[in-house]
Image (cartoon, rainbow, N blue to C red; front, side, top):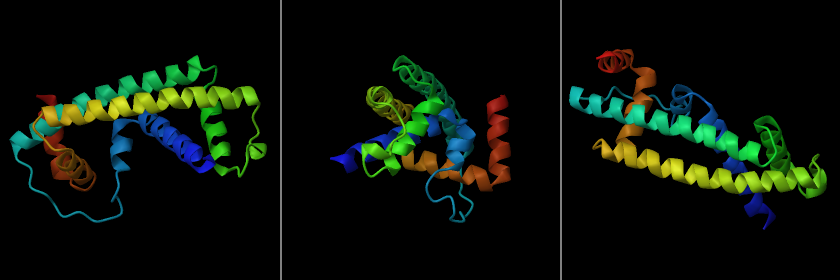
Length: 163
């Protein structure tokens, strides 16, 4: 039971961290970042779809960030206290190892429920936005990873975004 609660809080912290980061940083942290990618072929049409999807994803991320901060604040916490308490809860073998009042723990638990709901909703919305542009999530992530390593692809995306 304790392991499940800790895993749940771990997910909540990760979501807050990812959503609070800028989209460029978040995309640079995608799985497989240590692997060298070969240049991929991306047509102008597909890059336009990617740009459209990325704009929608960023909007969803921005909205989710505000919702997450709001949920944490509504529980009577600030983001720093929430993250600090969650980290302590993850590391502690029992609640005695957590340097927080019972009230703070209850507040974190309350916020974590809302964080999970916001996270799930944002993930679903981002997937719909990507698929709504005619892309798979896998292809979207592949292009996003390639953006970090391919200056020409980055330049092409910038040109599309400026038009």
